[in-house]
Length: 88
Image (tube, rainbow, N blue to C red; front, side, top):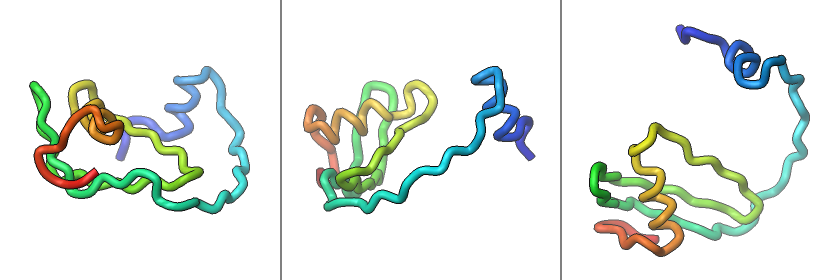
């Protein structure tokens, strides 16, 4: 059991309850970014066996605690960081 429901969290974040909004179904396009079984080394953290495929038209969020490797994944996806293993 979570200490707060989704509605509680939304109310705490936005000071009001938000009504659900209908979103249109959008067909995904071709794969644009593929991260396959990456191992990435940073100064404080190593990300191991990370895979992700992003399609044209897709919106994705990458969340985690500070220092958990999101910056490594984004830098590898952008071609700024070379993966120790895997394929971009």
